[in-house]
Length: 214
Image 1 (cartoon, helix red, strand yellow):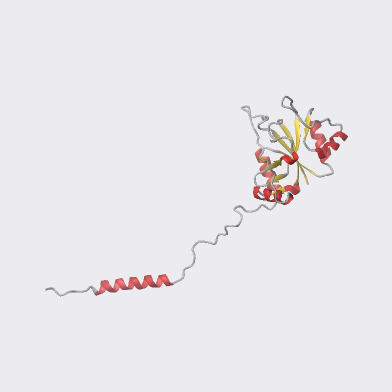
Image 2 (spheres, helix red, strand yellow; image 1 turned 120 degrees about the horizontal axis):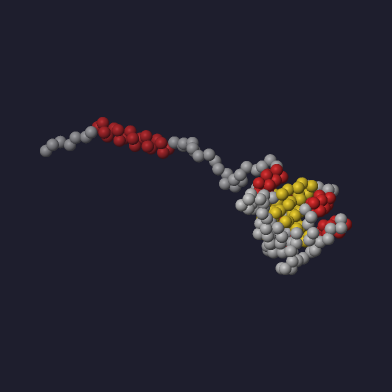
C-alpha cells in the first residue's frame, strides 16, 4: 500500500487564502459610491425664476411684455389698438372698468357661431421650469383657454411665478385651504410655422401675448 502523502505547500496556500478572506470580511471598507439625497431636487434651482420663465416662454414661442400696476392699462390699450383688435372677449371682470374708461368695447361671452379677434384671460400661476401657464375655471368662463380665438392676451402677476408644477399645486392648495380646483389647464405656448416659414396661428395653436405685472 502506498502511504498517503500531503501537499504541504498547497495546504499552506489554501490556509493563507482563507486567512486573507476572513481578514477582509472583518475590515470596514470605504463606500465607493457617493451619498445620494433622494429627497433633494433633481435639477439645480435657477438664480432667477423670472429669467428662467422668460427664457423658456420665449423659446417655446410666447410673446412677453413686462409691466407694472401703473403702466399695465396703458400697455394693454396700446396693444389692442396697435393690433387693431375689433371684437374683444374679456373674461377678467377686474379690468372691465379700465377697458370701459379707454373706450374699448368688449363682450364677456360668445356663442359657438361667434368669432372674436382677441381674448383677455387671467393665468393663476406661471411655471418657470417649462415656461408654462396655469389656468383654472375660477378665472375663466370656458373649459379650455384654447379654441376661443387665435390671439390671446394673458394677464399674470410675478408673485404667482413658481419653479415647477409641484410648487404650483402646493401654492394652489395654500391659497384655497387645501383644496385643488376641479379643472386645471396647463399650457405651454407654441410657434406654428407654415411651409413658407411664416407664423401661422389658429384656434388650436393660438398666439399667447403675456402681460406680466411686477
